[in-house]
Image 1 (cartoon, helix red, strand yellow):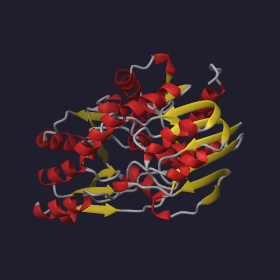
Image 2 (tube, one colour):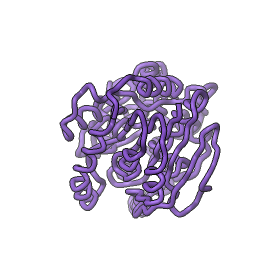
Image 3 (tube, rainbow, N blue to C red):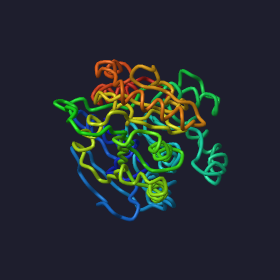
Length: 362
């Protein structure tokens, strides 16, 4: 099959959608001809590239605040090409919707949808954008959701038939975790990994540090608009020496962080799946998540513990302390493997089966 994957970012970033598209594309390329159309904000990466058997073409775009990714170049190119399968990714940006203009036998979308914007302005845009979004989803032969939460949300907001949506979660490359072992250290580590935006909740972890014993360290992997506030607040609370920031870690170093941490915490209000939670659990690290969106699906209060929004700082500090003092057995975390946590090879096979399903012609 000739397959086109349409990615809202540059197909070179570490964000969830980029990882998803890259992971399935490289595996599908072992059996099919796979092309990726991606944006190239700031022209940071080559326009044309061959990566692990995948042909990548990047287009100049307009992306204020690293969002929307509008590319007239991409749209014009899409009107001229033809593929057997077109798979668009990322409801909250233009490229997925542009993908509906490509001539093809099968049009698939994976929305990575959580239904809201991250500011009042973006919420207004999402409401205005809804008719366009509805048109794209109606054109799709099949919609892939990465969680039951996302499927339910799309059915409710767009009045879609349940049988039009299939749930295929994000995946994990299990081979990356082979031989990964927790290294001993003389402190207790709380880990956060992700883009630093207010809705992700990293600031709560800085706020509870004074409530925890002095040997507890907060490790933050990522960058984003919230970072200056986190640094300033850590100084105000006199815990700056217990907060460590990391950026641009190698993949191996990031996985080692997951393994070494004593608890991983993500208090995000909006997630369609959360790959970082899956990776933390695969590394054998207990998690604390907000009891919201798709994060609620991880909560079992044995390997992954939930806390309600709005976050109560005293309850959060007590929960973190309890896990640090009584870390669950690693085997409890790995119960998710093979059920909610699948290898990317399995995910690619499931996606390929969606491509092959018979549907009514366009």
